[in-house]
Amino acid sequence: MIEEHTALGTSRRVARATDTDAAAFAATGFNGEIVGREHPGYEALRRVFNGMIDRRPALIARCTDARDVASAVTFGRDRGFPVSVYGGGHNVTGNALCDDGVTIDLRPMKRVEVDPLTRTCRAQAGLTWGQLDAATQEHGLVVTGGRMSTTGLGGVVLGGGSGWLERKCGYTVDNLLSVEIVTADGQILTASEREHPDLFWGIRGGGGNFGVVTSFELRLHPIGPIVLGGMLLYPAPMAAAVLRNFRDVMAGAPDEVGSGVALLTAPPEEFVPKPVRGQPAVGVIVCYAGPAEEGEEVLRPLREFGPPAIDTVGPMSYLALQQLIDPGYPTGMRNYWTGEFLTGLPDEAIEVMCRLHLSKPSPMTQILTLPGGGAAARVPDGRMAIGQRQAPFNIHITSLWPDPAGDDANIGWTRELGAEMKPFATGRVYINFIGDEGEDRVVAAFGREGYARLQALKDRYDPDNLFRSNQNIRPRGASSGELAG
Image 1: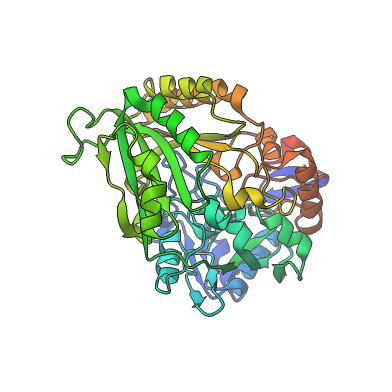
Image 2 (image 1 turned 135 degrees about the horizontal axis):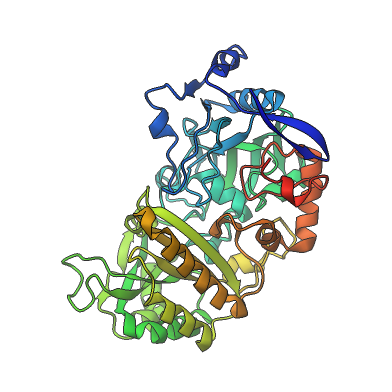
């Protein structure tokens, strides 16, 4: 059914898929499962992490391999339907779903092959980080992954891949050797430094703008299964002092130290001391990607500061470390996020964060400060699409709340904090940390020069902007008002 029209350089019609299109889709030779709105599993399959998102695709194409993905891409393109790609469904934008179009569902694609001799793996795009970590840790190997085990592999990698191990092992994309990708014309390509190197440059940070990545070949590192890690917890009145100490310690910390400071609300649990329980607090998350006895000494300046109300740091499995913050981010809450790379962490910036922390409307909301440096910072800017590697800190403001009645208060608070942090920002952002904030913020993720290079790739591989349900890099023939057509 033709619903509307937009232009991307020239006029074209955009259709809306209906349930009756499922039969035509099945006739294309698609081997996966086609889920329409009347399917008993439809409602569960269309849910994403962010409870604010309520989109209803006409068809959910549950793919089993790259050929299924190519069939779904071709079907959606030829009929002018909106197309989206569901990997983990964790991104705050909810772009895994599209209204009245075809959602290409990669979740059934969970095969992973680990080669312990070459320290590499090939992983399909439907995996979560918890599933990939479990497979690689069977061999004592790991690659920098998302900070939550429930995040999807594809979204994290294509956005760059920030995680607890980035200072030791680099971003995930720094360990990416090749991908299998389905482009807008339905071709199945391999992109690497030797094959389609231009495309390989762009997908390392440029998101899902150039095609559907169906598998990733990754370099692994010998870390785990046991690491030194855990959390230090302090009452909110100590937050500024804790952040200053963290800033000073991390300035000289070795690459093996992965860490972050979270301004949060302490859980109302028995193990939390009563003066802190259920109250605003500050948590320091640490891990040491090296020998535990060495880590004990290196982490001493963090662990002995205060002292903390709680110190859970000790030998723990890497898998447990990767699940450490999962309970604070339950699926289905209403979410509004933003972030910034910072030029530094001066006392004035610390004051802003600590002050706004005490006025946050929701106890579930957190302000996460992550240090730069290490291996990720030693890769020259321009080597791949992700940039801003020299920033000393990256902040991620994650507002969560359960009730739609709280939307205005929580969104307003997040925007206020974001605005007050602007004087300390570099002007660049990490694409996976922001919500739907407009084209200027997408440009800010790459810089003007990087964005122009990405647009040239878009012109070559997706000139009609089929893959636009993302942090969109628009083709150069499109105006900014045509991004959501």
